[in-house]
Length: 246
Image (spheres, helix red, strand yellow):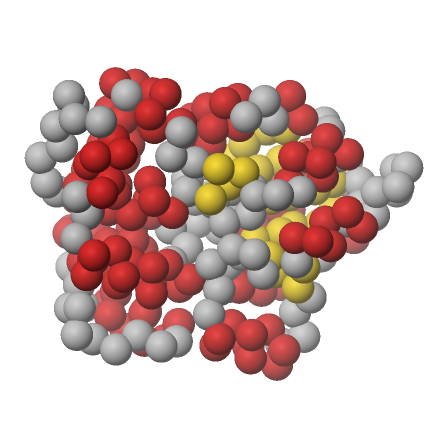
Protein backbone atom coordinates (compact mmCIF):
# COMPACT_ATOMS: atom_id res chain seq x y z
CA UNK A 1 0.00 0.00 0.00
CA UNK A 2 1.14 3.60 -0.56
CA UNK A 3 0.62 6.49 1.87
CA UNK A 4 -3.03 6.94 2.71
CA UNK A 5 -4.15 4.92 -0.30
CA UNK A 6 -5.99 1.67 0.07
CA UNK A 7 -4.58 0.08 -3.11
CA UNK A 8 -1.48 0.24 -5.29
CA UNK A 9 -3.34 0.44 -8.59
CA UNK A 10 -6.61 2.21 -9.41
CA UNK A 11 -8.56 0.99 -12.46
CA UNK A 12 -11.52 3.14 -13.45
CA UNK A 13 -14.31 3.11 -15.96
CA UNK A 14 -14.73 6.45 -17.76
CA UNK A 15 -18.38 7.29 -18.56
CA UNK A 16 -20.42 7.20 -15.38
CA UNK A 17 -17.40 7.03 -13.05
CA UNK A 18 -14.98 9.79 -14.06
CA UNK A 19 -17.13 11.80 -16.45
CA UNK A 20 -20.81 12.43 -17.06
CA UNK A 21 -21.12 12.11 -20.83
CA UNK A 22 -24.75 11.10 -21.09
CA UNK A 23 -25.87 14.07 -23.22
CA UNK A 24 -23.10 13.43 -25.73
CA UNK A 25 -23.80 9.69 -25.82
CA UNK A 26 -27.50 10.33 -26.30
CA UNK A 27 -26.87 12.77 -29.15
CA UNK A 28 -24.34 10.47 -30.83
CA UNK A 29 -26.93 7.69 -30.73
CA UNK A 30 -29.72 9.85 -32.15
CA UNK A 31 -27.70 11.49 -34.93
CA UNK A 32 -25.52 8.53 -35.93
CA UNK A 33 -27.83 7.64 -38.83
CA UNK A 34 -29.14 11.16 -39.41
CA UNK A 35 -27.64 14.24 -41.08
CA UNK A 36 -25.64 16.35 -38.64
CA UNK A 37 -25.11 19.98 -39.64
CA UNK A 38 -21.51 20.98 -38.93
CA UNK A 39 -22.35 24.69 -38.82
CA UNK A 40 -25.05 24.32 -36.16
CA UNK A 41 -23.84 24.66 -32.54
CA UNK A 42 -23.78 21.33 -30.71
CA UNK A 43 -25.98 22.65 -27.91
CA UNK A 44 -28.63 23.45 -30.48
CA UNK A 45 -28.29 20.03 -32.09
CA UNK A 46 -28.48 18.29 -28.73
CA UNK A 47 -31.63 20.19 -27.79
CA UNK A 48 -33.27 18.97 -31.00
CA UNK A 49 -33.25 15.34 -29.81
CA UNK A 50 -36.91 14.36 -29.28
CA UNK A 51 -37.98 14.08 -25.66
CA UNK A 52 -39.47 10.63 -26.25
CA UNK A 53 -36.11 9.30 -27.41
CA UNK A 54 -34.30 11.14 -24.62
CA UNK A 55 -36.52 9.44 -22.03
CA UNK A 56 -36.04 6.02 -23.60
CA UNK A 57 -32.26 6.44 -23.73
CA UNK A 58 -32.12 7.45 -20.07
CA UNK A 59 -34.29 4.45 -19.17
CA UNK A 60 -31.97 2.01 -20.97
CA UNK A 61 -28.62 3.63 -20.14
CA UNK A 62 -28.09 1.64 -16.89
CA UNK A 63 -28.09 -1.61 -18.88
CA UNK A 64 -25.66 -0.54 -21.63
CA UNK A 65 -22.00 -1.57 -21.46
CA UNK A 66 -20.68 -0.88 -24.96
CA UNK A 67 -21.30 1.58 -27.79
CA UNK A 68 -23.43 -0.88 -29.75
CA UNK A 69 -25.65 -1.24 -26.66
CA UNK A 70 -26.75 2.37 -27.16
CA UNK A 71 -28.37 1.25 -30.42
CA UNK A 72 -30.96 -0.67 -28.39
CA UNK A 73 -32.61 2.69 -27.63
CA UNK A 74 -33.63 2.73 -31.29
CA UNK A 75 -35.37 -0.64 -31.09
CA UNK A 76 -39.08 -1.20 -30.31
CA UNK A 77 -39.93 1.66 -27.93
CA UNK A 78 -42.97 -0.23 -26.63
CA UNK A 79 -40.89 -3.20 -25.48
CA UNK A 80 -40.81 -3.09 -21.66
CA UNK A 81 -37.31 -3.06 -20.17
CA UNK A 82 -37.11 -3.32 -16.41
CA UNK A 83 -34.09 -5.56 -15.94
CA UNK A 84 -30.90 -6.61 -17.69
CA UNK A 85 -32.48 -9.72 -19.19
CA UNK A 86 -35.17 -7.56 -20.85
CA UNK A 87 -32.49 -5.33 -22.33
CA UNK A 88 -30.49 -8.28 -23.60
CA UNK A 89 -33.60 -9.82 -25.18
CA UNK A 90 -34.43 -6.57 -26.97
CA UNK A 91 -30.86 -6.24 -28.21
CA UNK A 92 -31.06 -9.76 -29.61
CA UNK A 93 -33.89 -8.67 -31.94
CA UNK A 94 -31.55 -6.27 -33.74
CA UNK A 95 -29.50 -7.70 -36.63
CA UNK A 96 -25.76 -7.80 -35.94
CA UNK A 97 -25.09 -6.01 -39.22
CA UNK A 98 -27.29 -3.10 -38.10
CA UNK A 99 -25.46 -2.84 -34.78
CA UNK A 100 -22.11 -2.86 -36.55
CA UNK A 101 -23.25 -0.17 -38.98
CA UNK A 102 -24.46 1.94 -36.07
CA UNK A 103 -21.16 1.58 -34.21
CA UNK A 104 -19.22 2.65 -37.29
CA UNK A 105 -21.49 5.64 -37.90
CA UNK A 106 -21.52 6.71 -34.23
CA UNK A 107 -17.73 6.52 -34.00
CA UNK A 108 -17.37 8.61 -37.17
CA UNK A 109 -19.84 11.21 -35.89
CA UNK A 110 -18.05 11.52 -32.57
CA UNK A 111 -14.79 12.02 -34.47
CA UNK A 112 -16.36 14.78 -36.59
CA UNK A 113 -17.62 16.58 -33.49
CA UNK A 114 -14.27 16.17 -31.74
CA UNK A 115 -12.33 17.60 -34.65
CA UNK A 116 -14.80 20.05 -36.18
CA UNK A 117 -16.46 21.47 -33.05
CA UNK A 118 -13.89 20.48 -30.48
CA UNK A 119 -14.49 23.05 -27.74
CA UNK A 120 -18.26 22.66 -27.93
CA UNK A 121 -17.88 18.89 -27.82
CA UNK A 122 -15.59 19.03 -24.79
CA UNK A 123 -17.98 21.36 -23.01
CA UNK A 124 -20.75 18.74 -23.15
CA UNK A 125 -18.87 16.70 -20.53
CA UNK A 126 -18.47 17.20 -16.79
CA UNK A 127 -16.36 15.51 -14.12
CA UNK A 128 -18.04 14.03 -11.05
CA UNK A 129 -17.31 15.71 -7.72
CA UNK A 130 -14.41 14.16 -5.84
CA UNK A 131 -12.96 12.31 -8.82
CA UNK A 132 -10.18 14.83 -9.51
CA UNK A 133 -8.99 14.51 -5.92
CA UNK A 134 -8.79 10.72 -6.00
CA UNK A 135 -6.96 10.82 -9.34
CA UNK A 136 -4.43 13.20 -7.81
CA UNK A 137 -3.96 10.93 -4.81
CA UNK A 138 -3.29 7.94 -7.07
CA UNK A 139 -1.39 10.01 -9.65
CA UNK A 140 0.70 7.79 -11.91
CA UNK A 141 -1.03 4.64 -10.68
CA UNK A 142 -4.37 5.16 -12.45
CA UNK A 143 -5.55 3.44 -15.60
CA UNK A 144 -8.84 3.98 -17.38
CA UNK A 145 -10.58 0.91 -18.81
CA UNK A 146 -13.46 1.98 -21.00
CA UNK A 147 -15.75 0.90 -23.80
CA UNK A 148 -15.33 4.44 -25.16
CA UNK A 149 -12.56 5.07 -27.67
CA UNK A 150 -9.27 6.01 -26.02
CA UNK A 151 -8.75 9.20 -28.05
CA UNK A 152 -12.02 10.76 -26.87
CA UNK A 153 -11.36 9.78 -23.27
CA UNK A 154 -7.85 11.23 -23.33
CA UNK A 155 -9.03 14.52 -24.84
CA UNK A 156 -11.66 14.93 -22.12
CA UNK A 157 -9.10 14.17 -19.41
CA UNK A 158 -6.76 16.75 -20.96
CA UNK A 159 -9.57 19.30 -21.11
CA UNK A 160 -10.03 19.04 -17.34
CA UNK A 161 -6.30 18.84 -16.59
CA UNK A 162 -6.56 15.27 -15.32
CA UNK A 163 -4.46 13.48 -17.94
CA UNK A 164 -1.26 14.08 -15.93
CA UNK A 165 -2.54 11.72 -13.25
CA UNK A 166 -3.52 8.88 -15.59
CA UNK A 167 -0.84 6.39 -16.64
CA UNK A 168 -2.87 5.10 -19.57
CA UNK A 169 -6.27 4.65 -21.18
CA UNK A 170 -7.41 1.32 -22.63
CA UNK A 171 -10.32 2.02 -24.95
CA UNK A 172 -12.92 0.05 -26.94
CA UNK A 173 -12.83 -2.65 -24.25
CA UNK A 174 -15.49 -5.36 -24.11
CA UNK A 175 -13.65 -7.69 -21.69
CA UNK A 176 -12.71 -5.50 -18.73
CA UNK A 177 -11.68 -8.50 -16.64
CA UNK A 178 -8.89 -9.37 -19.05
CA UNK A 179 -7.86 -5.71 -19.35
CA UNK A 180 -7.69 -5.33 -15.56
CA UNK A 181 -5.60 -8.49 -15.18
CA UNK A 182 -3.20 -7.45 -17.96
CA UNK A 183 -2.70 -3.98 -16.48
CA UNK A 184 -2.04 -5.41 -13.02
CA UNK A 185 0.44 -7.93 -14.37
CA UNK A 186 2.12 -5.30 -16.51
CA UNK A 187 2.64 -3.05 -13.50
CA UNK A 188 3.82 -5.92 -11.31
CA UNK A 189 0.93 -5.38 -8.92
CA UNK A 190 -0.74 -8.32 -7.22
CA UNK A 191 -4.41 -8.57 -8.16
CA UNK A 192 -5.39 -8.13 -4.51
CA UNK A 193 -3.58 -4.77 -4.42
CA UNK A 194 -5.56 -3.29 -7.32
CA UNK A 195 -9.12 -1.99 -7.30
CA UNK A 196 -11.55 -1.61 -10.20
CA UNK A 197 -14.54 0.75 -10.16
CA UNK A 198 -17.39 0.81 -12.67
CA UNK A 199 -21.02 1.91 -12.61
CA UNK A 200 -22.06 -1.07 -14.73
CA UNK A 201 -22.80 -3.96 -12.41
CA UNK A 202 -22.15 -6.61 -15.07
CA UNK A 203 -18.64 -5.25 -15.60
CA UNK A 204 -18.01 -5.16 -11.85
CA UNK A 205 -19.10 -8.78 -11.42
CA UNK A 206 -16.95 -9.95 -14.33
CA UNK A 207 -13.83 -8.12 -13.18
CA UNK A 208 -14.31 -9.43 -9.65
CA UNK A 209 -14.59 -12.95 -11.10
CA UNK A 210 -11.28 -12.31 -12.88
CA UNK A 211 -9.65 -11.88 -9.45
CA UNK A 212 -9.49 -8.07 -9.18
CA UNK A 213 -11.20 -6.44 -6.15
CA UNK A 214 -14.04 -4.42 -7.61
CA UNK A 215 -16.49 -1.77 -6.45
CA UNK A 216 -19.81 -0.73 -7.96
CA UNK A 217 -20.03 3.04 -8.43
CA UNK A 218 -23.47 4.08 -7.27
CA UNK A 219 -23.20 7.62 -8.67
CA UNK A 220 -23.30 6.37 -12.26
CA UNK A 221 -26.14 4.79 -14.24
CA UNK A 222 -27.88 2.25 -12.03
CA UNK A 223 -31.34 0.73 -11.69
CA UNK A 224 -33.41 -0.69 -8.81
CA UNK A 225 -32.71 -4.18 -10.16
CA UNK A 226 -29.00 -3.59 -9.75
CA UNK A 227 -29.42 -2.85 -6.05
CA UNK A 228 -31.01 -6.25 -5.52
CA UNK A 229 -28.45 -8.06 -7.69
CA UNK A 230 -25.53 -6.38 -5.94
CA UNK A 231 -26.91 -7.42 -2.57
CA UNK A 232 -27.54 -10.99 -3.70
CA UNK A 233 -24.05 -11.32 -5.19
CA UNK A 234 -22.41 -9.51 -2.25
CA UNK A 235 -20.81 -6.96 -4.55
CA UNK A 236 -19.22 -4.04 -2.72
CA UNK A 237 -20.49 -0.61 -3.71
CA UNK A 238 -19.04 2.87 -3.31
CA UNK A 239 -20.63 6.32 -3.25
CA UNK A 240 -19.03 9.58 -4.30
CA UNK A 241 -18.61 10.75 -0.70
CA UNK A 242 -16.63 7.58 0.03
CA UNK A 243 -13.92 8.35 -2.54
CA UNK A 244 -11.94 10.21 0.14
CA UNK A 245 -11.35 6.91 1.91
CA UNK A 246 -10.42 4.93 -1.17
